[in-house]
Image 1: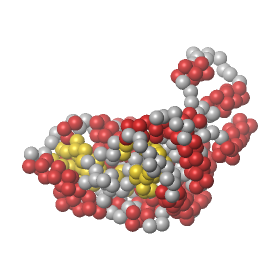
Image 2: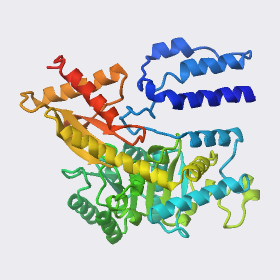
Image 3: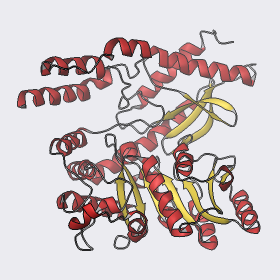
Image 4: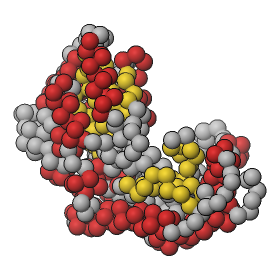
Length: 464
């Protein structure tokens, strides 16, 4: 067992030591993958060394390296070694993190780390609460279930929910999972800066009230995936308070920017939310999977999710002993708090503050570099480490349609080269290149090399 385990650790360490030198992008068709892996479940045992070698050679090499310095797309996953080892401990000891009696240490560690986060975001530590989830999607779903219970009780037939056209798709998925009809959802257009349009929001709420409907929840975003934009949280909070609407903030991407220099100013009003989603496996450098929901009153969670089946009646402790299966959807829960705890204890908060601040400044430096070039146009400026731009040389006579095709092909050629993961999004009807720079291993030189690669493909003139 030790020999086998040492080989696994050696492989992980080798990955961390050499990942910067590897190509970040892989490809593989369904046919190619089935050629490698498709077989019936074996009846007889296999040599464990052979199985491990096969997995290291064929499985671990056939996924994009999301922690690579040139992995810019979607939201990269920088991860960290301490947390990876913490996950190994949690799995190796097979800790059940659902109820107090099964593991009082795991439950207490989740309480302690949750208090760190409540304090970080200005939520009340005594009254507030929260729960670690698999990711932002489950955190958003948990928040909306709670909001519906608190605001609507059992009848949500007239309830209406509001979100912007830049809100993350997980919110729409959560709304559908909860059984809301399409006509109960209000998608409010954003303004020219991709922020929630307050006037359009007020108009929608007023109209719904006049029609006898019940506005019950609003979802704002602290760091949209497309542009890193933060909605006007303080202004939205005032509207929600006046209208008695549950205020949920999806800060899965940008919430941890609160640790950056001037981060509290950028996220002003985040402490006014009734519930807040944050994702430590994004911009807090944790390995997948760990999301989090913070809430102003922990009783809201318990009042929404507590069930008392007969087979759990012997494990109910006193009221101070939290059973986290009463605070969320999952009964079976892995010990997610351990990696968060061990990494914060090992590195200290100062290291996380420096890394997040570095990422914000790197995106700003990237914007400055691009603005000095006659070939590039900034479409959405650097905001919370996200920047959007497109190839559009000064004096060019290309139509918008041809510019879209050109930038799409630049992205495709970069990805096909496997030297960087750089894909497109669409803003204001334009196809643009998007960089998300939350990896502290990424340098400005990495970015410049990638831009030069883009220019090489653009200058081949095979697009127009």
